[in-house]
Figure 1 (cartoon, rainbow, N blue to C red):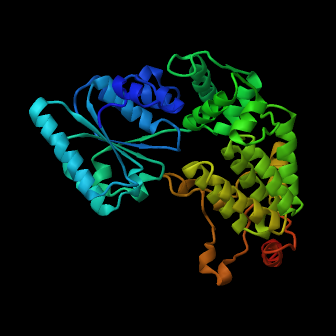
Figure 2 (cartoon, rainbow, N blue to C red):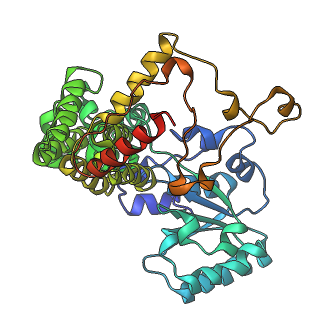
Figure 3 (tube, rainbow, N blue to C red):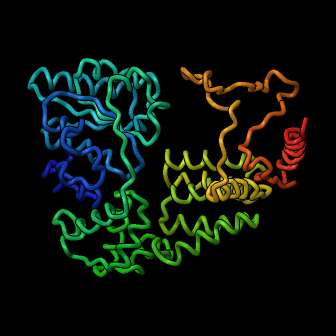
Length: 434
């Protein structure tokens, strides 16, 4: 397959808007600024003739395929695309043999682009190794999954790994506005109302290709594209939600309070509203992580593990699949027994510190490892708890000013009940005068 930008091919087959608007140079690429600056691997690949192997890892619609096409188009390299969904070892070897033949006969290099490379099995990835190692091709692999888990290490170690980020709202807005006016796009034949533009940005979720697909569908229905036209074209109602306004704060407040009140159904409703309105899933995940310690705490210590795992999963796979991880965490948080003892404990401790209740660290607890510490008496008299029964020994731990202060007051809810009993015994033992 030659470069996508073959004019004869374009004339013969009408192409989707997302394809027509694909950037032709790096300067036309919107977003991914961290990869496009002077001296970056992508710039070097475009500006030099030396072959290079790359993995482009990022969420859908962030420009992985686009960057591969740009490399081919700008450098006039021959472009061959293989989809890992349908190709086998035979296809891979045939593409490499053709690339070697072209290189030997004309000196023209080939960009071998493998989309969804994580779907290749080990044998298929092994077939790529000779071409990468001997630089018969400029290999570019695109993946939405972590390549450290899905790509064989010999192939990964011979390639540069570039991580793409989800496009910002401003990036997607710029993509849409360019498509409306650009001769390759709608060429000014349609107008896009500001509210409709905002709705398309929300629906896109950082995916430029999705935003252009929705815009094209709306433009087929009317020249004056309004919110109503977009709703009809995409079959998805606009959720009235301003991420900088009252709706943002009202919905996230109701979301937190529903989890706190143990109403999983209500919490899931507000989660769905935020997702459908285009709220940043990382913001939602951060709020769940905070909730897990603030409102559940030691009543169910596994709740924080679930919340953190959901946040990491969202960062790794993005939307739409990430909504399942968020829902998992929301249900766990809502159904867990509740305790705010952790947040009250740290709040009380910080309050005392701010009041000036900061005494000297007891001498036997001070660091005794550096030269001269022993002469100052640091560490003298320290009792190593592991040398005593039950790992407990009476000695002063807190500064004198806060020696009798009680910060952690556990509830009897859920798993915190046994913790409360154990803490009461430990505290009584430690505070009792020998």
